[in-house]
Image (cartoon, rainbow over the protein chains, first blue to last red):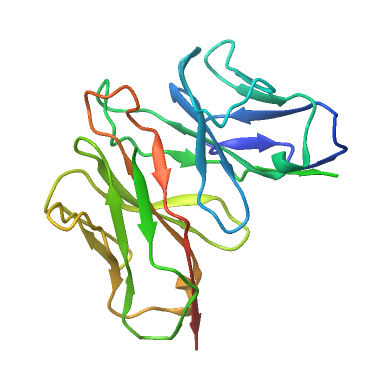
Length: 118
Length: 116
């Protein structure tokens, strides 16, 4: 088990370009989360998948953001027409709850993708 | 909505000093409470958790007790080490029965620096 991996680790792009990040969760973890962390702040929830179903999206996730988890394994987060305000660390986490509906499952975080929009 | 407030940092201590990082929360229902740690250059790691009132979470010498009456989950350690230098995040997740189970709400983080 290699843990949660994220690619790329760093991305520099120009304003207006599209970017896509990938997250590979721990195998067999059915829950997958995306968070965004800006400098000096705690992570903020973006979206959540249970298997391939996207069950919740934050109001932070504007129409320019889209996330998928097509086969219930890896996930992608795409940002279209990037803006300077999108510069942040994008974190992915996965978990496998022991009980359905549990809120106490341990989330394992990846190292994050740092996005810089010039 | 749900929120978490941590004491402002940074916190600077000498080795073997006593550590307290305050955390208070606002939440509907019965949240679970967590402390995560982020060491320099690494990802977030779960340090400890508590799932109901009066529970005490503990790990690596750190402790925190879920106090529903004061809506607090303060992190303590009796004797810190240089290797404890990191950023500490308090977080909550909503209780069972809500649709946001598992989703974490984080505080802003507290930077801890321990000097030899």
